[in-house]
Image (cartoon, rainbow, N blue to C red; front, side, top):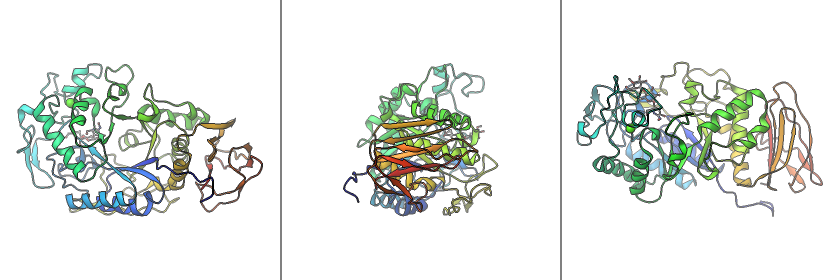
Amino acid sequence: PSPEAPNATPHVGVQLFQWPWASVARECTEVLGPNQFAFVLLSPAQEHIQGDQWWTSYQPVSYQLESKLGTRAGFQQMVAACHDAGVEVVADAVINHMAGIDGGTGVAGSAFTHYDYPGLYADADFHHCDTASGDIENYLDQQQIQECELSNLADLRTEDAAVREKIVAYLDDLVGLGVDGFRIDAAKHMRASDVQAIVEQVDGDPLIISEVIRGSGEPVQPEDYLDAGSVFAFQFAKDVSGIVPGGAVYRALDLVDGDVPSEQAYTFVTNHDTERNRQTLSYKDPDKYHLANVLLLAVPYGTPVLYGGYAFSDPDAGAPQADGVVTPVDCAEPGAIEYPEPGTWLCQHRAYAGLAQWAAVVGDAEPQNVWQEGYAVAFDRGSLGLIAINGNSTKAIEPELTTNLPDGTYCDALAPDDCSHEVRDGRVKVAVAPMTAVALYVP
Ligand code: LM2
Ligand code: CA
């Protein structure tokens, strides 16, 4: 490392959607750790209903850590491997509800019926609200949002001490296996005070990221959950997805998610829901999605969470399975993902491995030397990193920029083989092709 080399702080996370534990472990060792990723966000680990769809993960049947993604032992080995690589592990905690189907047997053999999960919950542990369908019908009614059912999913009385105890025991079990944090699934559908009371009882001091989708005019807002920890920045995801198609990429520098402070905002471009409901850009919009991911990591607001999933045409289709178990992830070659076959693992995050290192180096330094012209923007982040982003879909640019970077020769974090970038006397000329970016940093 050069004399200016800072202590890089891992910063970027990645959601590895429906990745089996063994594949997560390998990714931590081979890709995430070496590239300064800070954490991995898993899919749910608890026992769930049977079926080929991905969303069986969101229908818990018991809190046994036996699922289509692997066994308890495999989970434990995965956490150890990720920690050895310097990567923290965030589990997806589905604690608002249990399964929504009439009954059956879970993937680990637990028998259940709707509202009866033997040894865990019985009928009295669930809300039974008085809308006609029993489902949430009106998102302007806080009580419905939090006490009616989300798509028939049996809604836990998270205000009850006995229910909280069961949830806390489950989360403690995960903490005992080394888990560093939790995504709180469907947090909007639990009172903020319930979420706070539950996470405060959990052992240690895990990272908490509540999933509260911002809906304008709704009585439940992400800001309500800041006393319980952090939140996902859905408004940022929608805004960055709107900015890129219009070309005004410089506007990404001003994005914030309502009143959520940067330290408590977990930003992203897409997640497993928004890539399906098309509320955000996704792999289905290759150039735009690429530039949105670049912006996600380039700006100082929030903690970025990249995404790695699989191609699909049927939005319900699960990841490739055999005998009820998701088969090991085999990543598509980068650049070969334009028209992928359904079921192809895309590993989109790998395209930003170099930029994750860039983000670790620049840390929370503010943008400086901001240059903007047409659909392009460039800026330093402090004195250790520079990025130039071209949001024009037809025209290349080649500005000569003023930079804080020390004189020297630099490689492009987005094209590691390209080490042709010369900084002389605080000036650098960068050629940026349409819908691409160039990112330089002090290694
Ligand atoms: C979430 N966050 O709050 C997850 O991010 C989202 O992926 C989950 O929905 C949802 N909340 C519940 O945890 C997914 C999926 C739904 C699916 C549910 C439950 O998007 O389509 O619902 O998981 O598996 C499915 C059927 C639905 C049916 C329900 C109950 O699509 O038609 O409702 O199961 O059987 C009758
Ligand atoms: Ca609820």
